[in-house]
Length: 175
Image (cartoon, rainbow, N blue to C red):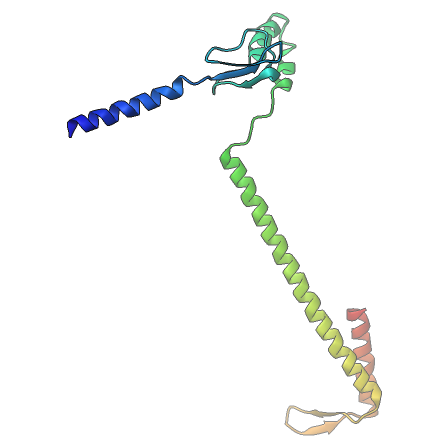
């Protein structure tokens, strides 16, 4: 049993060490040939030609230009910063952006649904108001049931008053 554990530990150590032996630097040389090495490219290699560098290493151009900038009085340091690419957003930042976009999309969908509901209710209200105006204009006797449960008919004055009120409301709301 102890021999198996020893073999497993040795195998895991060998596998872990093989990742360190892989090429860490990839760049394109002056002739346009891709170079792979565990050593950094020669000094003076432009940063745009370096395709891959180990984590935590500064681009070679920036290491060369910063001392020169210090000798000139620090004027070239902002130019070196301007050449540096913008840092890639972290996974947490990208996730936060995604969640923000999802929240905005949900809010927009809710607003659209609410507007559609209001438009539907308005269309229904306008249709009913148009029917009521048509009924009042038709001249047919209209009866109402009062609070006491008695049925009464609209007089011509009450009909004209309601017709005027309904038209005003219809023109204000539905046009």
